[in-house]
Image (cartoon, rainbow, N blue to C red):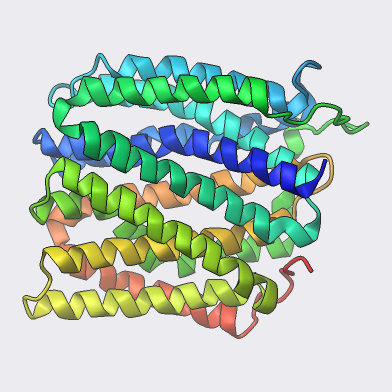
Length: 401
């Protein structure tokens, strides 16, 4: 399969998955906070996304099984799209101002379907791309996700947000169904791909972490992202508390946030190829620490208002997507042949678990200790990660040529 065709498929599928994923992580918290729910209740939405982070548990099944009509990975991709389109309809019957448990349960099931689809998409991408195209693949994933966020924020949350929860959720469900039709009739997926002679064992799904390079990449990525991930996670609360409405918060946090994220993913592609993914990750750590320090200083002198909040949110979006592109371009080079979905999902899932737990814990503490105290701690981690990357302490992780 030609690289351009693979990138087209990855872009469309990433767009489809991000529509639901971003609505769960960013859209639902906006409605919860606007309905008067506490920060503790909002924090539960991150825990509801844990099934997405646990998709490595069934990663070996995706590598081993799949129907002949749509190809091995394509079967799981289509199945995930059908399931998520149906499940999102259940959210329309919920009430963000009432009991949170039913919403969390519906989100939980939807994220299982989205996680399955994304795991299969990653396996398809690694199987068909050449190492030289890994940075382009990672960037395409990020761009597809940011385009979804722009449409979600501008066309759904901003355009329809004032019409209420049911209208917004129904619109997301209709969009998901339309994408299912597009996937079935336009994308070739991975027809003709042969399964490996020796199937992936369920007991060996953590084999990627036997590689020192994978362990180093895992720890390094969490360190450098500290000052970007938490402001990125806090943006729903920060924007609402700064006085913006749900519609305005959607426009700033999701539309403008994804535009800056797309810019970050596109800008990162060139430096990754020229300097390597590690150097780019180090730059993310240094930049995040600088922004966090500036935020703490501004808040201490009373200059952290609505527009400063917007700047922090947008900067965090930019750095998150730069770091994502660098991380994934390195990760694809570490995945074993015939176990692409398993290795990619295992690494990404365990990374996501750590990020989700950090986001949930930080969000629950936000009302108690304040933004500045959280960022001060994050600065130490980001600087440490930046120094380790820049000095080449993890030089065994090689960026594909």
